[in-house]
Image 1 (cartoon, rainbow, N blue to C red):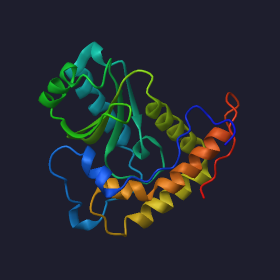
Image 2: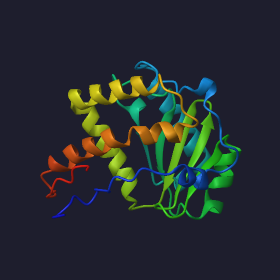
Image 3: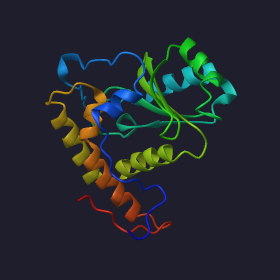
Length: 209
């Protein structure tokens, strides 16, 4: 395998059973069986600001870090019209220390993944958002920020990612998590380019297949 970047993860496509196991509550159907992918919207940063305000009002200094991530954080990129946010708290496994206040603020717990960096995901309603909760030092928030920053600076990968999303929007899916799984191969390939270009860490290419 050689030496790999500290943020590298192997490509693993989740099974339907694994997806169902981490979901909390009823599985929300995809309206019309199609995932909405919208053209770039200049209001997305302002919507993030509103989500950030709601989270900070609810948690105060328990917010250790808050970042706008995902496709709505990349200018010029097609995206689901859902604001993705990474939240860092002292201990994401300690739901009692933050979850009740977020629920009171209008968020609903949708995903619980104890075996994957104790990740939790909550859904916000207004603006529609996904709030991903992690503890300090978690790898995934570092990955999502690297991915965001790369797409902001690399037109070819941004356009390839947008084209795939537009194509997937024409296909039927039972859930958004199934849609996300279909993006996995291209996302992995983009990460490979991110890691290979990082002068701070050596990375032996790990191509799929």
